[in-house]
Image (cartoon, helix red, strand yellow):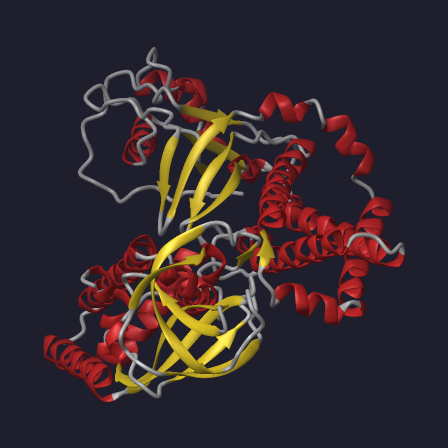
Length: 553
């Protein structure tokens, strides 16, 4: 879902007004949907500006046939030609008027949304969703809401009642057919999630503008652009639009959870029950993550709509940067959100939370990406490089805030040097545990550690401890321990299930390098993840070995 109320771009030197101004081709003036709703000016597909009724009337007259005097006469008292000119200059600065020298903004299908989202528009869903408005009106009542809430709670209780089975399915490799089915059903659920946003917006009289496919922090997903929700007159309507997707996912999770209990009680297929348990967990986790307000997802959009404050996150992060700049460099700063006392803390959480999300993603999937060889190393390294660039850009903005606030130069230089020296000291002086991740295969009466070409083989010394893990799709359970007997690798082949958490692919073998381990003897045919404890490394060396060295191995 995407819901924004854009701020005007930075002001530039105004160009002379044409004698008879005209609105840009992609600009529309929207009357209030009902009493109490705001007047809005739409520029393009995604940009909306709230304006006063007088300004809306003025823009409606800018059709290229009237000059400022004509407009002032039609608007009446207290408008004058001078006031009309000032209003039109403001419209020109916000790129609402036609500029013959500027190429018209196209309706692009592929758009980039900072910090790391790429959207591809596939359909314009307005007419399609209008057909569902009678059905939406029937279910938009308190009775259906209570039923949906009860079903969502029932799904949680079903997981609690099957805690052992849930833990087992999360800590074991998943079969290839189940993985494909889970991906298909999950993405169908994501489509329903986005359709729910559009249906609720359409129910209240809004117009969903776009639906399509996106890469959200390199994760494939769908989206529905409901920016038109800013035309809705009541905050609670916009909140419901924002939360409709989360409600849909919790409903799917509840249905899957209840279904897993029914299958288990009827003595049905264990594979079907496990599939339903995975579907329940993934939908609850996805819904919970969507509800977190520190990233531009449904929870943030609901909070922003509830407070009726546009760009809450961006302005809160500005306040957070200014608070940090004031503590470090001094100076005098204005608040971007002076009426929101908690904005700096909220902004600080918004700045740090994406780093936490990426670190958690690396914790869950970093070893799998490492095992996929150079492709995984490229993905991880590009993500780290992008995060480093974002940190650098944030530091530059912090310095710009300090300069604008009049912080003394000597203090800015001194603090910057001290911070740089502190970071260097941490990278050089702090040591962290270093592990080398690969797979293992138990076959022919031996246990073999297998690795791809990007694995740091030099860190595997004789006697190093190795933990043999189940290689679950989310969790891992320890199957045993072993030790490295020799650092000399031999070329061989191993089943794909030794490198990725998918079972049933033993016939698919990939070229790897391997060494024999001493100690644990899992059952023949067992595969999973092997983690070698390779001592400690300085933090700087650890970062290099993890994210840069794989390119050169």
